[in-house]
Length: 443
Image (cartoon, rainbow, N blue to C red; front, side, top):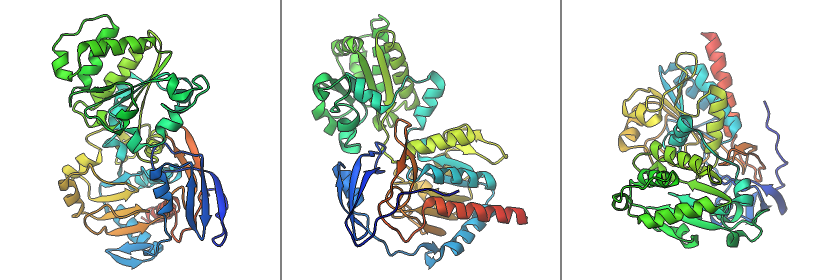
């Protein structure tokens, strides 16, 4: 399989790359214009400040293409060692996949299948509860294009897009000029519900400060009001929001032509997790008895949504999948990376484009020091100890082509702009898969 890509510009002339896609966050803005000179991005037009930093800081690197136990080596030697580790393990774990292409993600699933391992993604720690909630109660959703063109009432719940997804408001939601909302912000009402006043609060009409751990109670109170049920007055003390304010909010929501609830990590990291998301999906469904409402999660990592999609159409499940019995088995908790590491149930780990491992406990990190770890990444190593095998890759979307999924499950192509001395994750994973197949047939 080969990946087609646009010609990479010459390094000694100024070249312009139109319609480039930024993989810095889940917005995957695909309207950037990159100016490239001497194999370096010198200008990123249309990008947010975070995106500009992401592009302008990409330098031609002179690190070794691979390491074995910290010692420089070549791709073939490192791949041989990685395959040896994977085939020797009884229960290997493949984890990450949020910052690479869907083509690479698909090969990672295949490798895990061949070696009879477990595959999990960063979704299991962050957005996994959304998938579980959808399985339980369904989802009323849409593309970001619909929100841009139709949503005259937007609720940001447990989210801070101004900081984490800087162009979300201007390109997809609050400030965007849509087909039926030509005046952008003036045509919209916007509410922020969060435990603290963050950067996004400045852009809102009212900001509703909810007490930590009471998102579920607030959503259920709103559902009760929609059904004509008077909530117990104690809900004010529980949520920290006056009942009159909640009633007023519900009246406004019922009068909207098209509403959208955009929820973020604040919902995930609040007690209740899966139930919080279920309650938002149920609230959205209830609102559709009066007018049109949708709900969407806001994701931060570049292609985390792509990992969900690839695993789902490859195995039938979005994360936490075991291939140990020769067929896919799904069991969150049992087959999610933190649980496996906490119980010391894996004897090797293949960590692929994980991004910051902020939600791994100290104990998880310590256990990773005791087992063989293979790391494939374009960035700085995320591990406290030196991995057994380190494979350096080019950066997807900047050096290598492929496909990614925006946070609303819309697939987008990548247009690389720079040359790299390193292979892409897809190329490296294909080399590993081919070697695994050769070794498996030899047995």
